[in-house]
Length: 309
Image (cartoon, rainbow, N blue to C red; front, side):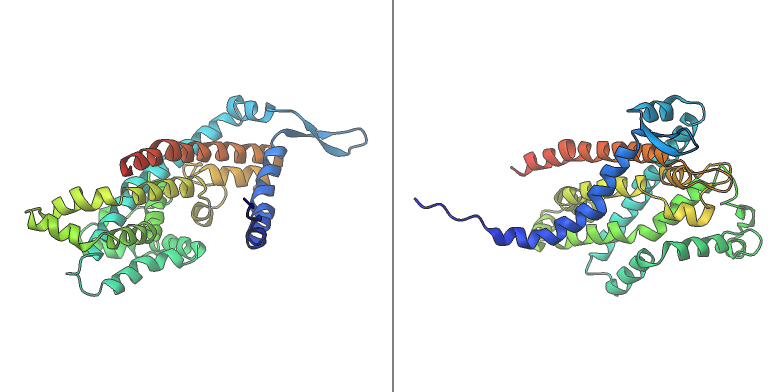
């Protein structure tokens, strides 16, 4: 029997994407990991170079009094940042998707557009606008709260250690809630109407239809939204940087892994940059994100596949 020739045209179609992805994603990632295994040295004559130190940078980052508290603070802030998105953004996005998938709601396209609009706006613009809104001196937050008799709540939300990170998390939720809403909505409209009608004929309430029919059918989408939220929040940087600058104030209370990496790698104000320790922080970020993704792939997704069988 004659064997079929290898489909060379597939390589031709894949080559541009593979080359671009390798040049702009794979190579920088591998080079960053390589850099994290070196430390700067000063040779005779003042020449600067790099010396291979193995995993010493990771041991320094995890145990040295200069680095370990910064890493722990950034990691704990990042966990809180992610938890607020999981507990607020995704349930709100799911609720909006269920509401806007109902044929009883008029103007659904208008609501979808309005809710999704902040997602496409520049993060710099979003940060600047919310800094103006929440300013206790010239912002409009005091006037708005005054309409409801809540003047006492007008505080410098971005200027207090206890409230800055939660406030920025909620601003991020407001901007990005349109993404999970659209993903959940796409999954909900794909459910056959016959299943929903059969449940209603059997006497199921609106909550029963959602919880016993719709929610189990969109569980794969719930998993994808969860892992996207995890990856996106542990890569977050831009909103914190545009509102609190690289120093992530007040007193590093909004410092997350992205801002710690930026401040370490490039330096800030009088602090000189340290590319090798910055690359080490990037390596830790990669390990954290990779761990979450592997838990999703080998725990959650494989379980869903067994249910489908």
